[in-house]
Structure formats: C-alpha cells, structure tokens
Length: 389
Image (cartoon, rainbow, N blue to C red):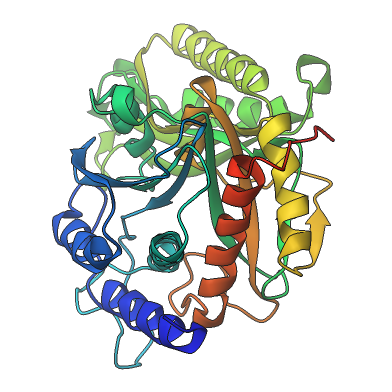
C-alpha cells in the first residue's frame, strides 16, 4: 500500500474510533474495531481479553531474537466534546480528548508496515491496553496470565504533546512523567444543634488545619529529592442546614512527584497531618487512595533507541530537561521489562489534552508509525547494536 493510501486508511480508522469512544473498562466495541482493522495484516498471533478488553497482535520474523512491544490505549474520557465536525463523538459526555484514538491509529499503521516488511529477527507485539485513564489497565494486563506469553524484552509507548511542533519527538533519560495518586480523607465527628455547637464534634477546624498544613508540605524540601506537589481538588463539610453543626467532612487531593520515593514520603507526611488533627479534635478518620500511577522511567538501553530512530526518520528531536507533570500507568511496566516513552509533537496551536475542543492531528499518524518502525529496526536488525547514551 502506498503512503497516500495508508494515510487515508489510518485517518478514516482514527475518525471511526473518535466517533465511537468508550470509557475505561468498557472498550468492547473499540477492541472489536481494532481487531477487524488489523486482521488484513495477518498477524501471527492475536491475544484477546487481556486485562479486560485489551488485545495484542504478534508479528514473528521466524528467527530467534528479542521481543519488542509497543503499547497504546483503548479508552476515552468522561468529557463532553465541543467539536462539531462529522466524526465528533456520538456518545454524550464521552470523548477521545486525550488522543488515544490517534495512538491506536499509529500502532495500527505500524501493523500495516510490519505486514509489508517483517522484522529480521525476533518478534514485534502491538498491545492495545484498556483503562489507562483510571490507572488500572497496566496492572490488569500485568496480572493477566497472558502476560507470561507476551512479556517483551523492550516495551515502548508514546503520547501526543500539544504545544510541541508537529512531528517533533521529545524524551529524556530517567523519569519521563510524574507519579500521582488521588487521596480521599473522611473525617467523622458528631452533629449538634447550631445553637449548641459545643454539644457536637465538628470537623470544621480539623479540615481547615489539614488544608493549611498540606499546603506547606511541598515547600519542605529537606524531605524530598525532587519535585512534589499536593493539590486539593475537593472539600465537603456537613450539609446545607443552618440549624445543624456539621459532623462529617471529606477532603480530596492529588499527590504528585517525579520520584517514586518522594511519593512515599509525601503520602506519609500527608497522612500524619490527618492523624494529628483528627486526634486533636476527637474525630475518627478514614484514608483511601484512587487512580494511582507510578513514575514513568525510561530505561537507558531502551531510551538509547529514541534519538537515533528520530534522526533516521528525519525528525527533530528534543531532549527534555524536566519530566512531564502528568501521569501515565505505563510506569507499572518498568518493573517487568526495559521500557521507554516518548512524546510526539501535536502542534504549537493544538488545544490542550482533555480540553473539550481537542482533536488528534491526523497528519502525525504516519510519523508515529514510522518512528515505531525505526525503533524495531534499531533493535531487531542484526547490523545494529544499541548504544547507551
């Protein structure tokens, strides 16, 4: 298939995915669309229902060698899209506003390139992962028995980056994206008549004290190796009842760090504040966590492929000075194999990720596919040896 024909095919595929988004854990139709689209590439093996609705396509060379995997995401976001083009989301309050539709199209494009020219040795696996947005999908894949059959020697992933010139590649050695988690605190006291607040146990003062103490934690730099951030995202105190002193409060915050060790420290310090203030005001408390992401860390050997692959593709490459502050569940794979993550420029005037008017730029689909294909060559071509930079 010529370049123009493949671009048209991938664009139409991306638009179809964009029009029919599905939330994390519900990606059944999306997985079916992906499987149907890649069937003509005749993968040597197809794995389905991985960690939920995930699926993987294996392309064998027929010769022994490393296993190289590329991963993308199946899920969309619970956001109402504001675009009005003909392929806009047909599902209310669900939309591909992070570019996962584009990432799927990129890996599908790699599948078509592999169908035309298989690797010289080893094999390539394309993983379409469920539930990235909730931080659950990577763990579900790793816990699936299928993982033992598809576990790669190298695992790569990408994300489009609004604000970066289109087609430009960016990455860095070490930490690429931050660790994060959602912290939920529940404080329970006792209600009373608003005329006699002394007869109850209001969590109001504890809530205020926790907020003030949490705000100071990131500035206590002696505790941390690198960047940390604690952002309060929601607070609730009592009910709207002017005759009642509140007896219950909730507080939610996002904890964020570049280093996983710093996340553990920040978590411990935040919990200590809650315990102290709950004890001070005679309250019971509960602490739980949600949407936990470890830091995405690029392995030196896998990372060494990225800049040379970009150069071979004639793409501009930017070595990042700092990690991204957003999070990705790809970091969970780093404990199991050699991983590397890179960014693909989506355009300097592109709306931000998760913005209601965001739309993945179709012109960078083949750029991503070719970048991935070049990484395959760098690892599975016998004439190439990875050099750690």
